[in-house]
Every structure is written in C-alpha cells, then in structure tokens.
Image (tube, rainbow, N blue to C red; front, top):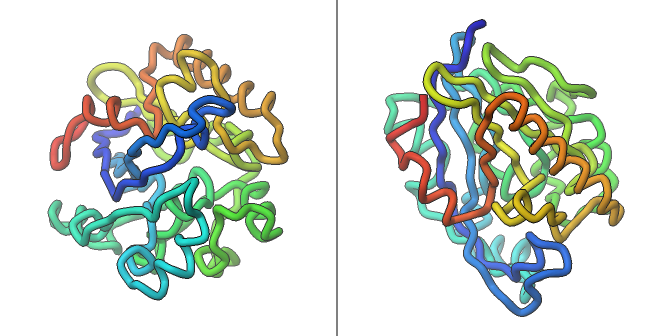
Length: 260
C-alpha cells in the first residue's frame, strides 16, 4: 500500500494558559506553556498541511491583538509568534510556496489551528460539516468569524476517508463538534496519529482526561474519542502525537528535520 513520504512538525507559535484548559477539572491556577503546532506531510499525491496555526497579523498588530486576544485573559495569555514561525516561512526554507500545498486539512476551526489560512490563498481546504456548522453558529468563542469567511469554497466532509496515500481522516469529536485527527503511515517506523486537540497533552491519553473545553459539555464524547485513538494506536502499532505538549514536541524531529 502506498504510504506518505515525510512529516515535518512545525512550531507555529506558543501560548500560555491555565492548565485546566487542557485537562478538564485539573490544573486550576497552574499555567503552562504550550506549542501551537501544524504538520507538513509529503505524500505521493502531493503536500498536505494538518492545521495552519494563528493569523500572524492578529498576533503582532497591536489593535488586532487587543481586539481578539485581550478578552481571553486571564485564562489565556495572547499567543506569541515570530515571522519565522509562519507557515510561509517554513515553506520557503524548503524551497516551497503556498501554491505548492495541495490540501489543507483542518482538524478544527479554533483560531490557533485555522487562522493561518490567510497566508495560503487558493489552497483546497477540508473540514468536517459539523465543525463548520458549529463555527457558523457563533457559539464557540474559539472561532473568529473572519477566519471562516471563505468556507463556501471549502470541501466539507462528513465521514472518515482516505485523504491521500497513507493518510486517513479519523472522526474524533468532543473537544469541538466536528474535530478530526489523522493517521499517517510512513515508509520507516511506526505510523503516526496526529491527535489534534482531541488530546492536548500526553496526560489526556495516559490518564484518559477530557480536554477542558468540550462541545456542549459532552465529556463522554471527548473521552470516547480519546479511547478510540488509543484503540487505533494499539491496532496499528502507531504513535500518538498530542498537540499542545512541549515535553512531547521536544522529542520530535526539529525543523528542518522530519520523520519518514
């Protein structure tokens, strides 16, 4: 079976927040620093991005920063991001441009995962129908309306499916209404499961702790997705990659190194 070729973990910024955001009911008053990650995947069918980080302009422009991020204090501190951490900067270091990305797969539509779309005009975007419907309802405060303004041109998904050679989408709702993860088969070593925010931290997986924010407070749905990912990992002999865990991220290949 054809497999993906390479995967680059990309550190697109950092954010400091109260740990209870990642571990429901645990960590009140404890603040952690978390990586904001995206992943570039090279496949025989083209290049895929899983998530795209924040909108750089909102992070560095004082007026926009105040409008979008100051209201999140004290639970969240405004994200930190450098020019070198933009998706376009990572692509340029590989001799690539936004036009070289064949597909952007958004695990969910929170600002730290979808905001960077503004740097990738014209790319094909995939997202789950339930995720987009919830985002358009304006109930989820983690979604910024301007970041989903182009959604009419996106490819809306409703089920698990093969995204490209060696890559399959996994339905993992709970943190958000239509959250999706990816399983990536590589030429060497174990497959990788990109958990997205179904599991922020290794603790979410090891101790089966739900994320702090669960769509409609459906904790059981979030826990079901964590257990589903763990079951898939056992069946496939796959590694589970949590999404906002610096200790785990620091064990991964650091750009421009990659996993293959």
